[in-house]
Image 1: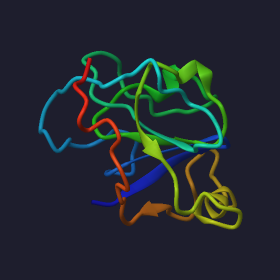
Image 2: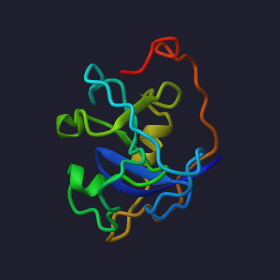
Image 3: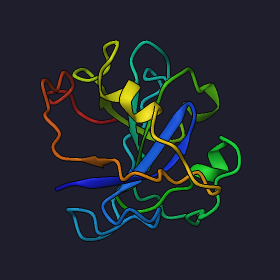
Length: 145
């Protein structure tokens, strides 16, 4: 499944399958619990990829004017990539991984930074994920809290 980055806010890029910021259907088809772990933080150099999950509260935000947790409200299947420490997001969203390929100098993340945005922080040139590869799941065998 591909996903389009619909908002670009300097240190945070957000996207979803619809490319609108309104999310889309999860693979589970309905609500599911977040998997937030206190030991996982938004920090560099990880280029964290976080999933806003499907919490049973909050409304999606269509206008992004500054990077705050309110502007990254939970919706179905929405995700974001951070380029710097974002401690105000710690413990609020499920961290699903980190960028490995493309995070190097001259890689995909740097190319994303060069795409111009319109007045609503939407990339003028579409930025679309083509695939995601899971390299390892170190907590797969551990029970969730």
